[in-house]
Length: 502
Ligand code: SF4
Image 1 (cartoon, rainbow, N blue to C red):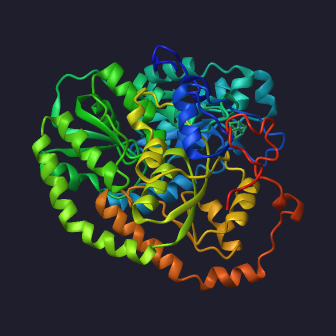
Image 2 (cartoon, rainbow, N blue to C red):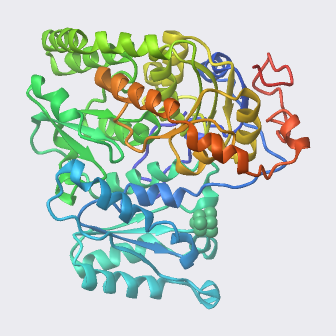
């Protein structure tokens, strides 16, 4: 595992930095133990249905910065899904009190075949100038693509030159898809560019401000930090250039998701002296207790942490017990990105629902902090027990369809929209909650538990859909084990039995 190095133009990819893998089939406990002992290995698939691209992750951490514009330097096709962040921005801006949410500013240099022969830098220069003129953005990000990388365009030099000309930061982000098969490298790439160019060395310390690295969830943290005399600075969605400049002045950094914030939190601690909370985000009661205690310790306010825990538990535990009673004996399957998927598995454990399996997109052997306490899957296993059919699926839907069909749980929990339809096709009630803060803390167990109950009780639509849905996969495929196309099936699972455990 290597430390963040801001003197390099590009972030080191997750496969090298954090030992991340994209294929696994076995038990969660065995995965954790392999990861912690440094023996976790990735394997190839001889068939792959789809792949994610780091550019979408880099875009999601830059497009949503209020006063930014983003240029994708490459063929226009690489930016075809970036407009989705406009929807995300407009829909969620109310949660963050953005007074006048502006339509997002996303552009492409639209490289054509001729440009791949003669180079695309002249186009990039012209585009940066035009974007500044049309948007008057305070900061412009330039995202690289495979085509630009293959022809060797020196994006950084053009950004530096245009920065001098226009007088605003122009930030190159090295995020072309082929650099890494772990597309969350795109988050790190965005943060690497932001840390190199936008975060200033601290001139003062704001003892009342805590950085919250997050996506676009509801504002839980203002209420949680208030008893400590602090307020959140949410980064990077809905932040401004000024917020990012001052991220180094905060008293601490916390994260909504360790997969998302691993790199930036480590950089803030290592290069800017902002300590990162020494535990994973607060999902599940046990972890929420740990989180408040770690926050209290960091701020030197342990007594306040104990008081908050006591008051919140008195208020919320009785309702949690009622929910547990109603959900007793139910089963669930989880699909999502790594750390948030682990968080949902903990929430299930807290509610007493049996997590029969999970298809999680990748796995980081260790986060950038190097702290085992940040490993949410480990916590899930220790606090609530093993998950027997735990898969790292790299978002291969054919594997999810296979595993889910065999286990047929009472509910499917998903973090990504495209995956819920598999539950619905099987007649399994499926729940998608885009707000990743929704299930956090003691109150989150109630909010999310009630949604689970509501989803299970209203299953008429999925039952009807199942009657009419056509499964595109053959019987042959559905009878194979889900890791059928792994080159090395037993590489990580000493207990592999060749079947999904029902
Ligand atoms: S993988 Fe490469 S070509 Fe494909 S969208 Fe990403 S940057 Fe573009």
